Image 1: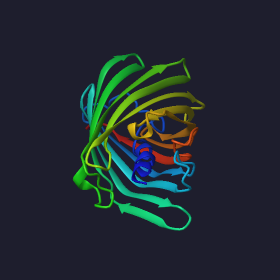
Image 2: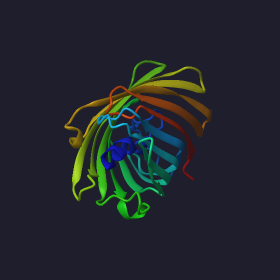
Image 3: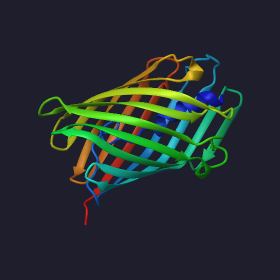
Length: 257
């Protein structure tokens, strides 16, 4: 049960980007500027588990907050917090829950290459184990690295993707290595509205390196120059992946003073 809960929670926790549900942007913000991103609600629900044991899992994140500020023209630092999180498992007879504040994340993004609207970045992170509620606290510190990229596809289309490696607590005093890859393509519909289509695949050692895939997309609304909404949803294409993962988020930027 613990393993399945971690597999569901991983994908809700990685939904931190501006333009897609899972894929990060390689763009950094200007020195002295600030960007606040908030997942109003982020849910991952799994009914068809790889074990076919009839247990339904649900991970719910409310108010994930990430604050980013620019340090150098190609470097920013980020602080993220799971304000409230619940992991729930039910077999139709009994229900178990773990809930409370999640972990505090420290991240840094270094844009290693940029040309026009194309770019590549390196984004390491660490989750501070002692900051989570004791019912959700992993036994070991978790960390990883993300390599996002982006490229234009014309005047109205754009594309991107990322490779990611996470070293997570395995629930038995050790670590397990998760491998993830995503690709995304989006289009500007009007000056304020856009849409994107995203694919994600991942593998974990406790699932014998079987690759799972999620497909989905979303819409974005640029309310003003500095504020946007993003509504997205991903659907699992195999038993290993969460069946459905909707998210609603917004972002608000402040210019340097």
